[in-house]
Length: 332
Image 1 (cartoon, rainbow, N blue to C red):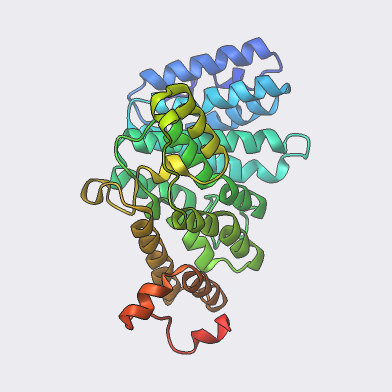
Image 2 (spheres, rainbow, N blue to C red; image 1 turned 120 degrees about the horizontal axis):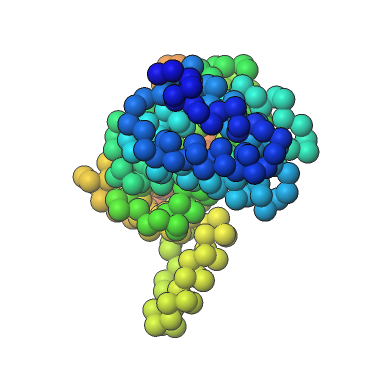
């Protein structure tokens, strides 16, 4: 596809004039919403470079917030799910490539942009009923070389990985609040890229950040019974909405965990918190047990598994699964 046909607005995205940039963004959104042709990778890279600098030039907080939302919403209006994933791949490749050039005065707005895109990505996958192939490809976009969660690519800035760990489940919860999922969200599958980083990263601080910012808060939330509704909330729709919003902000992931499964939404249906907790911990154990997992990371993952495993059930059964021989020394 020729550049002049595919990207008629590309050069205007990075204009110094706000009106020109705004018009270009609208043209971009309309073009992608109507296009049925795949954009070549080279054209996508040029397009995203223009979008990146369009956002770079947005200065005022309200303008930045509106533009971040508008750009992320484009994902949901692209006709094909594959086209939307191609657009997302272009986003992440550009973010990784340009990240080190973002100065301290602009970094917060790019953190905001990432939040918006993560949120819209979850709504895209939910809209497509958590199609297994789409979720797998989305995870690969994050985990492949040049992706923000590739554990073996030394070019990936640690601050980018940290930010994703900080916001990922939180934004999944917010997405569930904004657009209730038609099928349960496959939580274990969704967090796989982070478990992969936790298993393979050579950096101790990266492993600990994923553990403290994502794994432990999620398992803690799964360990906490959901709050029972009150009579007032049952009769008062505004109050019920306020309660949901407050719970969402508290980081307890109430919206998500009310409609979540482990891997297969259609077969599993909505799982209880205790059941989902066991399945998440089992996946942590399984990944820790893989031969390719770094030894130091394996010990830390086993420690998390042991700390949150249901000790009472294991004591009663007497045959609960245990880490390989010799690993117990890390728990003393």
